[in-house]
Image: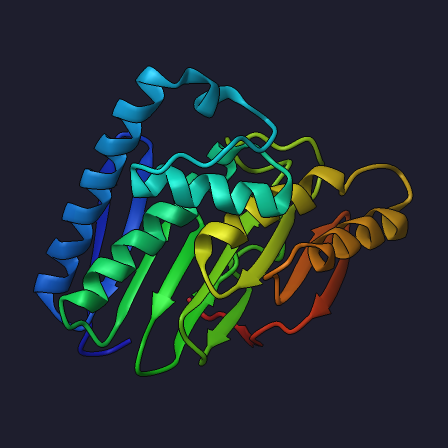
Length: 233
């Protein structure tokens, strides 16, 4: 991605990669991530159930970050924290585009939110799996969000055992929550049945466009997914 600004930014648990067509856009994203994290931290201090619930809860009116997390979680039947990285990425991209950025891409812990006037290539990361960073996706329609849940290579909570359960949506918040829901059901010795459950779960969530799952040497896809590309280092 030539002629673009790229910066890695970390604040506490949020490890982000920001890509923009302007340095001001990168700074705008950093400000947005910091602001929304701080707002969320203040909210969960007063509402600890929001932090710990593994089931949907009633969306609050504010702050916006908590509202969007709860809405995405409700669609996916998971707890609101399952959408935290994706929603923070979405809000950063929203602030970048509002500031005039033509390219606004934020990756937060593997969850990607993107708005762009040109194709964007994203590699799939799945820990130590042989397929990790060997292939990825070319995004051409925007806005776009994708997220990956892993029961084997991630610190995020998952009740499943998939190497990677990647979900594609218009926004990263829903993709994040949906990927958690999909990853939770991919487990068991019957690999094909595990894939089927995961893919069926993906399609059952309103707003999910497609999904790709890696599980014990098998790959399953469903719905509409971006062009798959080979990644070269």
